[in-house]
Amino acid sequence: MADPSDVTPAQVVAARDRVAPHVHHTPVLTSQTLDRRTGRRVFLKAENFQRGGSFKIRGATNCLAALPQSVRARGVVAFSSGNHAQGVALAAQTFGVPATIVMPTDAPATKLAAVQSYGAQVVGYDRRHDDRETIARRLAADTGRVVIHPYDHPAIIAGQGTAALELLIAVGRLDALLVPVGGGGLLSGCATIVKAWYPDTAVYGVEAERASDTYQSFRAGRRMTIPPPDTIADGMRNLTPGEITFPIIQRLVTDILLVSEDDIRAAVAFLLTRLKVLVEPTGAVGVAALLAGKVPGQAERVGVMLSGGNVDAEQLLDCLRHEPSTGAANRHSDR
Image (cartoon, rainbow, N blue to C red; front, side):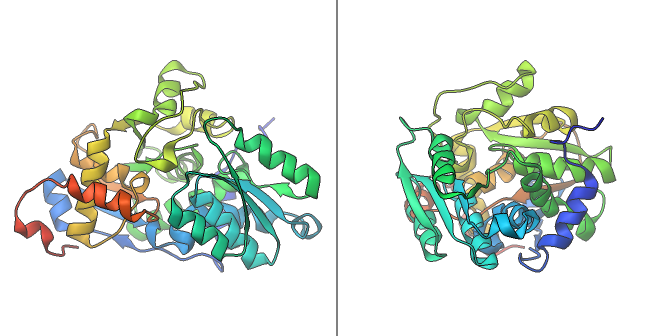
């Protein structure tokens, strides 16, 4: 009997039809300079141009759309450091239902402001001492609302997989796909559709060295928990991979690659100065892996998920200060 928590390629396709009226069909970008630097043909799926600034609107919309009307009308609760918060707030606004978002008090100011601008109520917590999921579930129990998990739900995973589905439809077969991994919703959803359509395509999760819970878990063969990580990639501050996402990652993902903080900063700076594209540190880790020579093999056609573009000014300045000095030509636009 099939595991009810598993996600099928058919669910990803169904999610595409469900979310299409409510999300952007984001562009696929290319760069001659990136191709020359990496010796590969690279296709960048620009989810930084998505509604809410990240891929998270896909899963949130799919999840809310799949809820019975009577349940959805009571409202939703979510917990997130930022991008899922915006995705749920936007999806709730789309369906005209109230939303409460549990966010850390040190969440990026731009993400907090965006969530509030979409009409959601924000409840703060201290990520060093409080359990955000416990807070969210208590709020849901008190109000009769439903919790929209940031990654560990089949409808969320299927919704996130629609980004890879769009990429495959646009560019065809890939030798490899690089996907940022936090809780694993985007990676497991993308892997589900990619491996169904092109079984020989290698799918790599990319993670910050300082936030290596999925890397360690993948090698240990079981879910590992790490201390709260200090990384510029704030979307990767999970302590443990998802209960639902991790088995999918184990089954379908080729490997988890690690990039340093400086690798990430260099990728953010490269994308902004060369492609004129603003990508947040978490969203830039795939490009970081390519530029740092972390992608194994000789894959010629490589897809990369640019998962989001919600970056604070201070974060961006930090990345630009670390930009490698390789000549004035780096300031010119190149797509």
